[in-house]
View 1 (cartoon, rainbow, N blue to C red):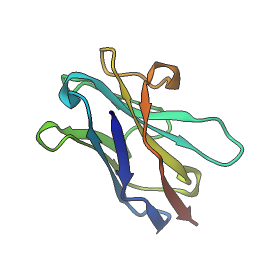
View 2 (cartoon, one colour):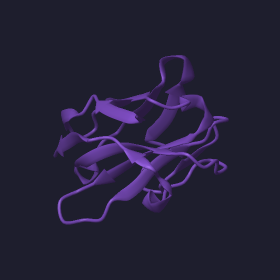
View 3 (tube, rainbow, N blue to C red):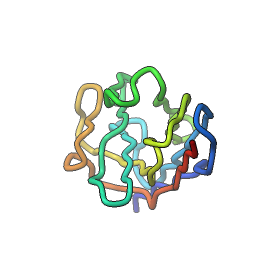
Length: 125
């Protein structure tokens, strides 16, 4: 059974940093694409960053240059390093697994097969 468990969320002031982690189990982690999504109250879920099995990445324009997605295949763990956070980054953050290879991964939620439970990130001004 595929399981994705996020951690690392919290509250920070604008300009601060956080690193989210997503521990994966139940499938061949290194073979598939992974992504980070976020959803703020009253807004649709949006793709933030994605990474394919070869390490190619893709980012939403709103986070380019501030967020970095990475993975450690040996630890079956996905990361999202978030720097220069601003209040607009406040949301629940979810990791997801896409069992179909797509170059650079996908920022579209419809492509993902499994989801974590989410971790809250709150950025105060």
